[in-house]
Image (cartoon, rainbow, N blue to C red):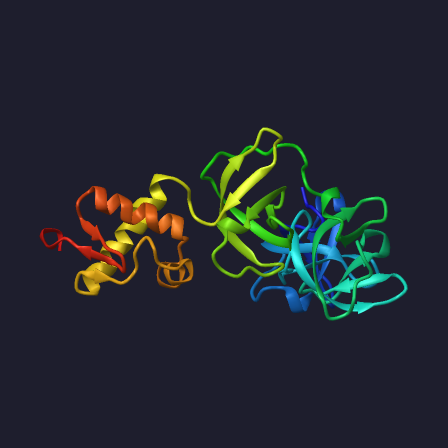
Length: 280
């Protein structure tokens, strides 16, 4: 079944003077201008298209891909504001409307905002909303500790960064778990650190547990070998220096070199670590 606001694979039914008509199933015949028709495609062939509404609110198909689709959360720039609302650039000829009723505060042209993209069947309109709670699932998600997830950074509070998880749930990246600058609207990979009893989700940027230590330990050993057996980073070194070298937190680094020390692969000194020769 063809779905508005999503990528669909549809069959070309026939050509007209200015384009082709696709089989949109319950949507009827969906028009696509020739400029979007892939070379060599003809009636009977199938094409991947995005279905939305043009400037005259007619259903239309395009092979262009938008920056975000219905059900997605994305950071988009406001390119115009008028008496109807704000219009965001989402990569298609018709900009995406954020009605005033869906704005948390008046949007300003030239600024970017994290929004949810939705399809209003009553008005036959794809639009966006800055009121994210309306479009997120507030029930606990089916996650487990250590699971890799997609994150969209939304804002910063007194305790850390609020992030949208997999276009579905809220999560928090505590400042103590963040060792590199994060930007509003940035998309990054992260991990589920813990699901609390109240259903709230704590996040981290490094995979928790044994796998993280093993991976970082291997990198430390490799770097020691490259540097002739000595590395001027100890468990007392500044977090910034550790992150600059390995992109890891001081806590993770201490766990990694602690594992190497227990395995008798290194010695830990005040200013650095040394590779034990029989392991070099």
